[in-house]
Image (cartoon, rainbow, N blue to C red):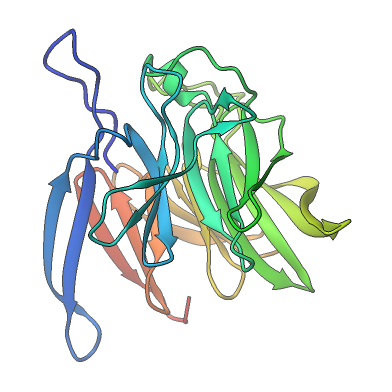
Length: 282
């Protein structure tokens, strides 16, 4: 997804474009050809933010627009229009859903922050900035973590030592207009995902890392439990124990990333998409 693109007309809302990138691989799995197409999201799914692969399509986080009854989680099957999965919490509209991840049981964990209101594309919030878990099979929707300034990235890792770890980033140190607050949150928090009375809970909140530059807008985990975050200097990397392992430098920083094949990471940085090969299987 693009950044917020301001309209040339003062009466029109800003827009966000979706980039669809198709590529071919050679015999050594290196990318031999790529095609980049920019698409406007369907009108029913305004202002998309994060997304993840889901079933035979893509699950999008729609931030919504000036109408309170827009926004939520939308599933777009391959070649078909998007289908709303979730649009409110007990009839209260979400603020601006930012990122979503699916767990091993099919549950969807997602972050919701008041970014849209701060960018003047959403009404005044009716809910706190929180993390939720939704079970599509049962319809169960629960708030599982709160106390954030601006929750953004989310990832699951594990199980490690028999416990799945949930990571949530807080980007409170940088306002959506670019204003920087040096004493604000640029933090990755970790939670233990634990079952209680038949339900999954995010427990034992703790600071996992405070990033070196900018704020952690996105976070992913590899098969070894290492944590990668999109930051102001590129991709900062930590071990499962929170020790800094290194930095993948990206000029101007980056805002999104995902893991491809083993040992491969894709990094989104403005008009550039970077592919990084690691020395081990990710």
